[in-house]
Image 1 (cartoon, rainbow, N blue to C red):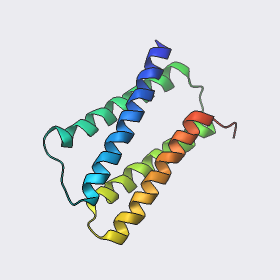
Image 2: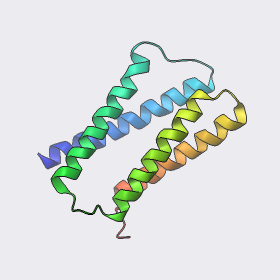
Image 3: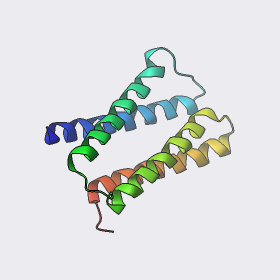
Length: 118
């Protein structure tokens, strides 16, 4: 069960990241998403969070390791920065929030792959 859930979580993380990059690219071109393009990322992100909760339930000690706490903090920052990057129309703000959201996303992947002891 654990390995199946872990592989699902990794797959959903990759798909979620690709959907964000795609939506960000559309936003930079001034296009808005419609139909499935609008709700599919939310569905994938919901499944991603549910799989994360399942993994925490199955395998994580309490209190949570510091690397996982950092990953959760970066996730919250990523959500806020990504929303601002996609919604804002001002070029300078869009560039700033795009860079911050991509940095937070990179930090999430770094912590997920490295799981540092600190």
